[in-house]
Amino acid sequence: MIVAQRKPFAAIEAMLAPYKKVLIAGCGTCVAVCLAGGEKEVGLLAAELSIASQIKGRSLMIGEVTVERQCDREFLSELKDPIEDCEAVLSLACGAGIQFLAEMYDPKPVLPGVDTTFIGVNEEVGFWTERCRACHECVLDVTGGICPKTICAKGLLNGPCGGTVRGKCEVDTEKPCAWTLIYQRLEKTGRLDQIRRTLEPGRYDRRTTPAYQTHPAYKRRFEAHA
Amino acid sequence: MGDCHFLEGNLRAKERVAHAKEILDEIGMDGRRLEMYHIGASDAPNWAKAVREMTERARELGANPLRRRALERAQRGQTPAGGGISPDLT
Amino acid sequence: MPKLFQEALTSGKFLVTVELDPPKGVESGELVRQVQTLKDRVNGINLSDNRGGVMRMSALAACLLTKQAGGEPILNLACRDKNRLALASEALGAAGLGVSTILCMTGDHTTHGDHKESKPVYDLDSVQALKMLKGMMGGKDLNGNALNGAPTFCLGGVVTPGADPLEPQLLKFTKKAEIGLDFFQTQAVFELDRLKEFIQYARKFEAKVIIGVRLLTWEEIVGYRDGSLPGVLVPASLIDPLRQAGESEGPKRALELTANLIKEIKAQNLGDGIHLMAMGQEHLIPEILTKVGL
Image 1 (cartoon, chains in turn blue, orange, green):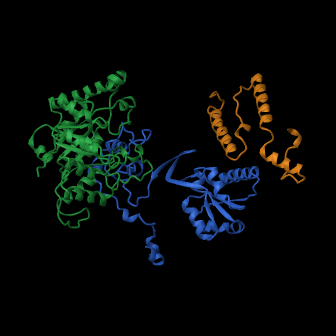
Image 2: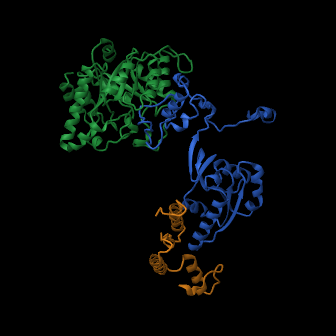
Image 3: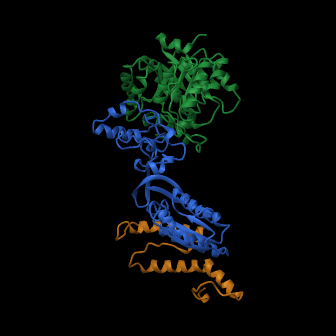
């Protein structure tokens, strides 16, 4: 899932300052799981903004709506009427959803209510950890299911570095040294040979411009993008 | 603290109340309007103490800011926005 | 032009190298003074590369200043700030300007330096970078394009003999050694039995191993905890007495500790030389060298 964090209240207030009628658009998928932008968070933020603006004597009308996902046009199209009715949209979806919404409803001002942080997992309610950097060349088979590009602070493909501190990372001793973890896991199943060979440098040509991806069965339709 | 019938319940509540107080501060409502006290079910004296403290605090803080605005409006002869508690309460 | 360090490597003599930091600015007077003091007592002077993530004058520029001052420079080349183009480019520049001894390392993360917001590069890790540099000696760049003039490098890697656990460190050391490096300079060692364990393994390979020894400053002693000095682990049995000795005695004890470590490394043949790190206290290096008879 994509993890995001709601922007500080003061930042959101500042963004909405030019507008008197806004729509808060939530997303029911990733951001709902990480308690940043789901229906509940939309309601909470709307109440916060309503109270704060009343106290300041500023008129602000706030609409609230949450759709299943903002990364799919079929759900974004449900927002047509409420969006027409507002001056600006504050989207609580991840960066991808916010942009998709902005594109569909161009030129309506669309503002980000969250900072998108990472691709990660739901360890427990209230706690999420980053697991993947979308590198286009997964090596989890070699490294025993632990991603060195994500879990190693330096993203080393041949680690560990000399800064590891008793199995913890030089950068943050609360976090584990990825390569120590990788070594220990592979050792348990006699697979250390996998990391005895040198892993080759990354292929950044695959990910330095915005990526487009198609499916082989859809080549004809999207050939231009393949 | 920690001696909760539901094990962690009061610890989690404490965290949530702290978060709620921060939100109240952020939006201009003043987080001091909300407080959590840990009082045993049969501890009448501490209960009374807490009630007195919060009543005193409510007096110090005055009407909640939304209410205050509504009162000002009413005094100027404009209708207050929405319903609410009687102005006489303060 | 005599290549002092490279000759010393094959001479069989006990090697001595020191590490200096380039200036944080253009004022190179202090660096030049340090070089002049040390140049005849050591086989090589490493110029650090934004060590600890603290921005300083480029290591290559500092190497040239060192050369001009009569010293024998070793270029530290970290993977933290340079992508593969920049690493190759810098190495070619170095070799082209007569600085052909390069110590290539991963590099301390930006997080503890004075520009923690900056983007850490790490396009290549130290293994990939060393492999690339070695390959360039054959006249081709990383992608197989022909070079207009192949460089000759004397290549070194870094290793941490005191790492805990040691096995993952040895696995990486092996990858580097198998590239065919000329030397290793290690991170600072404080525990000799751990060094013994390491050196037994390292001797299987041809590369010379120069053991890192570090003179701790009083601030470092007081502030020490696991992880406060990247790559350096000091056991409580050594750090506590230093702390307890207090501000006036502590540094003296630290100097004695350093000198004793060097003597033991030499006496017990636990390495092919020592790499002395005394950042901020370079003026004490001649005293230490004299103390240990080097």
